[in-house]
Image 1 (cartoon, rainbow, N blue to C red):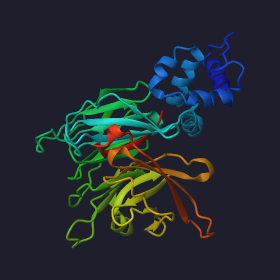
Image 2: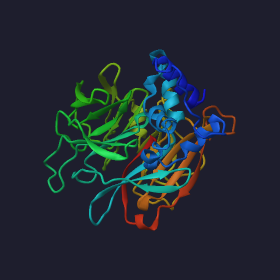
Image 3: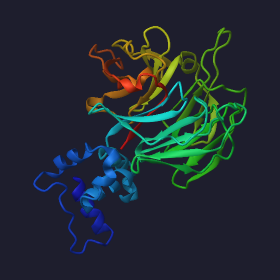
Image 4: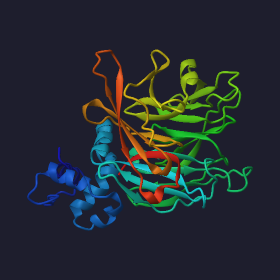
Length: 384
């Protein structure tokens, strides 16, 4: 169903449709073609484009951001609609090593253009805060951290970026000051967990933080974290001199409970994790920076064919994945390196005939020369 047809139906369902017609998006073009044209408008200028007509305004505002206008029993379809009316953008957070100022840039993977975003309004030191994206809402949350120059003073503050408004604003502060925490999006909510096991959950609809079940046992220092399948996975990684296996924990949002991470997952988690199309992948920190996928049934990380991250994308690496599958059941992963050079990996089923074997193809998008000194610290994919 085209956007205009959906809009007409929504107007009628709301009881406002007596004699009211929704204009064509672009007169003379089939609606499906017009929709594809509008999807390629840079989201930074959507506020201006909304003034063209009421139909453009509805398309650029309601369809991507408000899928719940549809009937409640169509919730699953609504989520798909919200993504289909949006395009993925890669948001990279990076520090200038001289000024120590945090920047956020957005890459349009289709045009290969970088878009400069408004300054991030935080004063936390590098690496001490958490960044969580809510892709379907087009929002990124920057959470907590420790004050620059005072590692002993954690903060409660939270700021949120909205792609629809292209701006930052303050969100509700956490219940407890935290720095160096694990965090992720689970079921449309933001879950944060400190090294001490205390956790809380932010509900973006209610705009409030709620307590979550605490994790029991020894402290788990954050090495990496990822959210997938309604769970938040936290691992402390291997540490020199490798005398004991790393600890790991899993938070189940539906049960509001923690459990120990499976042995194969925590012992094989040797890099940064990205979730793409519902699958967990890590980019190994050693060797050729090969890609591995977690096989839950076997509790092991399986090597993905096709070679490692191209060497011209230098460390430090941060990774992100697209929520849904791309054409042909493929999955897409982004590896952002120094100077904001980006390796775009497209993962597909291998043609070897071996079940569940995968292969990745890499393409490199070089960062502009003015980004040469930037060091990435986080990456998120939003649908804007």
